[in-house]
Length: 603
Image (cartoon, rainbow, N blue to C red; front, side):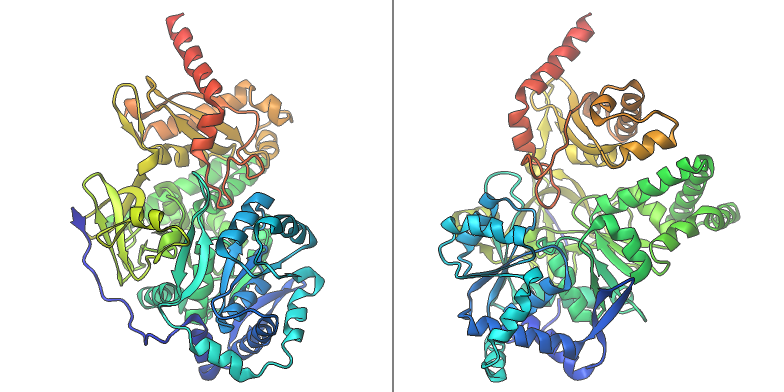
């Protein structure tokens, strides 16, 4: 088995907790901006001392409201400063915050509140409060529900007026590296979500490891970052602590639909996002160019940029490539850089493969996208590319303090400071997840000679065709989904004679794409059978097929009449398709697809 060497991680006293990071900054740089909150079309800074003072006031209110050390406090909200404030307040009070996606149903909310044993809940809106209210029958320990938009944070702080500062500092001091920091429930692509128990040590040590490994990314002069991922997701929670460890100003924005406008006013130097965000930004730019009659020059500029980036990897960038890139930058690329605020130098992409095309494209803009890899159970980033040596198409080497091993069957195993301590109330699942201290990630991958990891698929999602061919669907799905018309792609073919796919169309992108390409407007239902749209989807599939053997290629597809969403329970809150549920519920459509293909060939 291939195993990476273990590089030493950071060392900290066993008494260290997340709040110690804030305490240190408040002493050493009391006036430094830690967070920035929207104020009209600008952003107002909050200093380390202001944030600490607010967090302690809210912590006093939690204590006065009966929240004891170790109690669970659930948070259900979009991404906003108040979420982070509640996280800090709960940690100062010695409590354990438990995130709930703001899109969660009553049954999902009830499961998380009940399984975690939450005693209090902070929600954003009256609608969230109603969801919680309906879930309380299965969450008997909940005693308090506060609503942010109804003044809930102020109400909590007001309740703590009689609590001494010393009670907060005593509680915070009693928490150390080994203590529970949060329980994050996995997305649950199969079965009920499991609660991953992550410690203060997981967050503090891993964040410091990232700061030490990536100083030019998180400690650059004038650096700041904008957080737009849901804070219920482990990646966003890690970013929250990473920014705290680095004392890097962090802004929050709740709606990805406003992301471009927010990037323009906030002007971050670093963003951290999932690949779908980078795909959307590229697709929107391409569509805008086509609508403006500049398709040819856009595509030329993109190719020139990608060629230039690829040449950088060889160490031989010719004068021709340099000249073309300079022209492309002057005509097209600088406009995309300006759209994203004009100051972005680094981005970290996690949650799935970005793809080499987009990696090279963004680097040609001057934005170095560092692909990383991790899971809820590894506190997010287990591995990440480093600026000194970026290998586009890989997810980089392990951060110091972590190790990767490739098992005999290709599964990626991990151990180290990032790895969680187990599943809440589920010793059986915890025992199954570990072998001799190594955590089974469920992903398939390989290591190169430099210890850089390449992800090739999910172990449970490997498709075995009737001919015995093993196919990893993720790489095909990601490639097809990169097309602006495609929302989701689900590759099928278990036990079948060939690989096929279910496709859903992107309702947001469809009108603009039709208009830009000179086609009449049409509904989603009309588009799914339209010859022009189908031909375009086929092009996306052909591009994906060019990366695999014929036996692995998608030979047939069907465009479904509706998308995979959270409301129809085919999509998790972290935007992963529930493959098992789709295949189960669409068994008839699968049989029809293969029957029709067989009949067509026979004809």
